[in-house]
Image: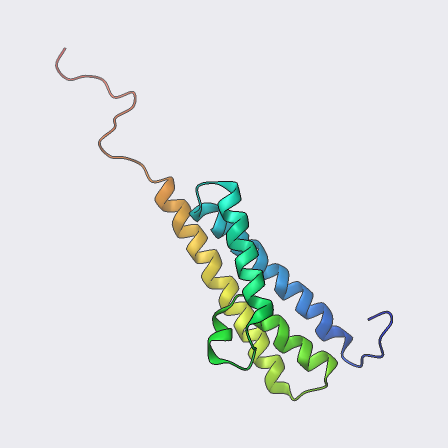
Length: 126
């Protein structure tokens, strides 16, 4: 925004905010799923590598978590039509909601109470 003549500066800020809104629950979910730190790092590196390699015009590119950032950048820099803005925002919001929900579900599964363990219950046989 500083060294470019952009007319849609607000979209660049929106893109950054939505990227954070997707990246935080994405990283949290990966840390909940992978048992070791380095395995999570490899998943992140693979995901970001795929993000750069996959052609955004392909239908399967929309399955990647940061596809919305490309749509928003195309809207902001190339002055594309409003469809790019709508698709980018919708994709980012849906991904953020699904990732947050998945992380919450993983947390509930991990922290569930085990009914077969009774802590502090007095014994009835005395």
